[in-house]
Length: 108
Image 1 (cartoon, rainbow, N blue to C red):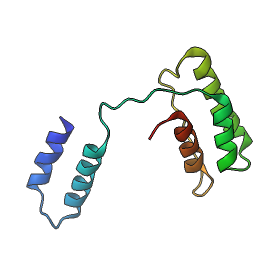
Image 2 (spheres, one colour):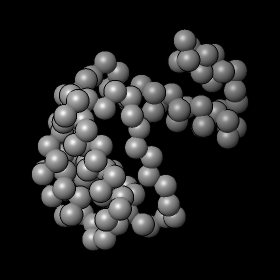
Image 3 (cartoon, one colour):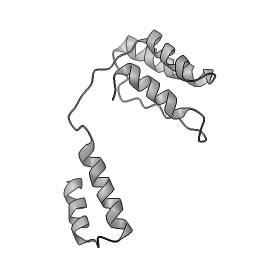
């Protein structure tokens, strides 16, 4: 439904307008998403700790919270909709930590 609405909006826009480019980029992003692809969850605390320590020095409280989430996932068999939100100023390592965990969990 969202794709059809965006396509209709795109057809009505001028090709030189900024909104056209925003809408087109959004549609490109939507169609590039791996819809329906599911990866298995991996909850290996030792691997997660090693991955976190490899990519970033410090931030022990953040790493501890991430490892708690991984440990609970391994005990319960999943995180059941829990979301980990990393907040902070640019350049503090949020993306590095997220990529390290995603890599260990087998998420592309």
